[in-house]
Amino acid sequence: MPVLDSDQSQQARQEAARLMAEGVHGVALTWVDNAGITRAKAVPIGRVPHAATRGVGMSPVFDVFLVDDSITTSRHIGGPDGDLRLVPDLGRLTVLAAQPGWAWAPVDRYDQQGRPYAACQRLFARRMAERAVAHGIEVRMGFETEWVVLREGEDPCAGPAYGMARLAALSGYLDDVLQALVAQGVDVLQIHPEYAAGQFEVSVEPSDPVGAADLAVLVRETIRAVSLRHGLTPLFGPAVLAESVGNGGHLHLSLWRDGRNLCRAGEGPLGMTAESEAFLAGILDALPALLAIGAPSPASYLRLEPSRWAGVFQCWGLENREAALRFITGAPDDPEAANAEIKCFDAAANPYLVTGAVIAAGLGGLSAGATLPEPTRGDPALTNGQPRLPQSLPEALEHFSASGLLREALGEPLFGAIAAVRRAESELFDGRAPQAIADATRGRY
Image (cartoon, rainbow, N blue to C red; front, side, top):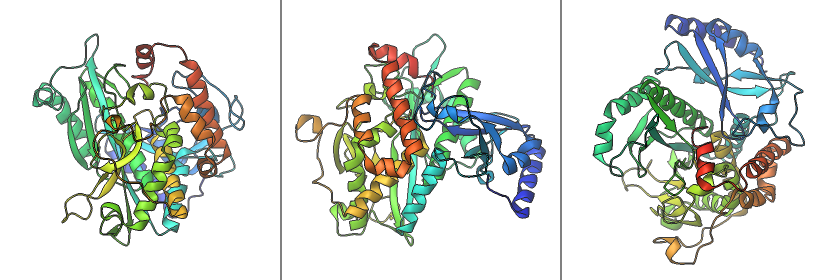
C-alpha cells in the first residue's frame, strides 16, 4: 500500500466525515477485471480511513475470471493462493446520486508488502500516461458509452434510429440519467438515441487517461442504477441482437503539449503535427493486436461487421465512420476539437487496459517515426483496397500474442493473464450460435 503521510491520513478522515454528513453509509470500491467486468468490494463509511491506509483484501485470482464467472489460470496468476490490497483513490471519491446512501471510488491494487501489483490494470494505465509525459505529451481521452434498455419480457423500446420519438418515450428516464451524472460532477457533452432499437449513447468531456477510464466506469454504473430504478434492464454487451448493430465503446483522444493541441496546426496530413501523425500511425499499425484489448469478447466479433459504422477495416479517414481510426479536424476556431476516434472497440473492454494499450501503441509509432497511409474515403467495404481487422477473437489473440510492444508495456503477469482469459473465453463459446453468444454476454457488463 502507499504510505499515507499525516496530511493524507487527515484527508481520509475528513472525507469520511464529509460523506457521513451527506448521508453516505457505504463506499463501493471498484476495479475492472480482464474480462471487462467491474468487480466491487464495499466498506462502511467509518472504515474509509482504514481502507485508504491499509487497503481491503481481495484475491488476485479475479484477474483470470471469465465473463460467466468461471476461472482459468495463467503462468503467473491463478489458483486460491495470495492476497492483494485494494486502495481507494480518494481524489475520485464520488457520492452516487442514483444510489442513496452510497459513494464510489476506484482502487489501485498492491501486494501485501505495499508494492504495486504487477497486474493492476489501473496502475498500468497510469504508467503509460507517465511514459507519454516523459515524451512531453499530455494525452486527453474520452469514451462514448452505448447501451440498450428493455423492460423485462419485452423487446427493446421502439422508435426510429436517432429519433425524437424514442427520446420522448423515455424522456423521464434520460432526464434522471443526466441529473445523476451532473450531480456527480460528470461533464456530459451529449446524450441521444442511437441506431439500434432501444439504444442510447452518452459522451463526456475528455480527461487524462486514468480519469477517462474512471469516468467510463462511473458513467456505466450510474446508467445501470438509474435504469433499474425505472424498471429497465440496461445491456452494455457488444451484441444484443446478433444480426443487428451492437454497442460500441469508442475512444476519442488528442495529444497536447504546453496547451497546444498537436492534432492540428501542423504540416502533416489534415493539419496534424508530425508527432500526432506518428502517434496515430502507431495505433493504426497495432490495431489487429489492440483488438484483443478493445474488442475482447467473442460477442465483439458479432458487432464487427462491415457497413455498420463499427470500423472493421484497418484504415483511417477524415470524418469517416467506417474507418477503424476516424480523424476529426473540428472547426478552425475551435483548437480543442481536433481529435481521433477509435471505432472498433466496444463495451466489453476494460477501459484501463484500453487507455494504457493505446498509449503504448502510439508511443511505439512515435519512437519509430511512423507515418500514416493515404486516408480512406467512402466505405472501405466497397473498395477492396483496405485490410480487414481480425474477424474472431482467436485471430485477434494471435496478433496480441505476437506483439512484443504490448508484452513489454503490460508486463508478463498482466499480458499472460489477458491472453489466458481471451483463450478461455474463445473456448467457452466455441461452436455456439451467434445469438446464444449475444444472450450469454449482453447483460454481463
